[in-house]
Length: 533
Image (cartoon, one colour):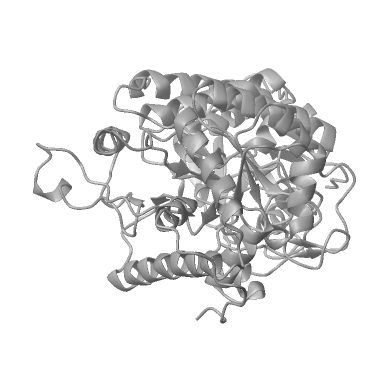
């Protein structure tokens, strides 16, 4: 329960409840499919208030139908504005089969092209707007490091703040030109953290050199929103960033941001517990200067259990009551609420979808995204060792052995781990392949491809994929290790050939195939300083 609120009671405001309700996301709107959809689709398409459940909404076509109905239902009120995490690469809410998935930010950093970054923002924006989602909680503007922080990794454009700034600004321009609000996150930067904010509260002594440059660049590119993180930066304040007036003043006054400030997901225990619970965290965030209190994303992976739904409803109601009481008791200035509401309403008016708003056609938007994905993958995959051994020497009759090392499942904020393993099918189109479990003997004499996505348990030790590649390379055979996730999966490997693909999606798989068995040419460069193999 929230602690008792102290302060001088103020006059009851009849519009306060509606204003507070606007600032707490997800909202309360019940999302249904329209008429003629059959009984199974007339139920609410959410597992919790204001959330679209992908257990019920099974395709982009149905999502388009749902958001069109919701937009028509909202006619006369604010235009429909639903948020989504569609970063590309590792974190994508829209991940149904057939949805073109772009390589993520680190792939864009490896390609080193602002044009490609802008195309990525535009392509993802086109996909989202085609299905009625007009607010993307991307791009990640945090710098990464070596070894990669679990919460950042391939979600970052790289370790060089100036390059990250250029690419982040380009992504923002592309997204917003496509009619989708972008969100620079996680201010003031997660670079240098050593714990995952989804599991523990990060504390930094100070920001790394240039940490604010990507956020400044995004602001200069007119980014619509900035998400403030839960990390504490002691050089700025002894409170988490999202509850720190000093951090928010830095964003508003020094960086000149005038748009919507969004909190990190307050439903995560590691985020709200240092502030005394969800309700107290929401109050502290709004007092500090946050406009939108985010309790979760607005697209869920599956159907939530009934008990979880009830908890989410209670949590949202508790936050709304606590914020309302905080205003009524003078803890939060009513003018602070008015400023936040004005910004959020402006965001809805600028990017929200009215019934007659233009939407791209899904097939065309998705086909365009696939073309962009292929271009990014082609320019980003990097050979970090053994380029002289590529393409592989594969005389007729040679069998290519594939050893997939299972994921360890350490990371949150990672939908890509559910991606099917496309590599065997891709390579089998050209050569005979044999799949062998990790740790098993390899019965053939040809090259061996060892690959994985998330196989490192700690930053101090080699990944399981690197250990497997080293085991097999000890016999003198040609071993190629491919990292489809964080590049530090390659660290400590003795494989003669190391390849960083940055993404497990189809486009990156095809690029790896071309390098291994085609022309052997890789165009990317790992955009992380201090990397050692």
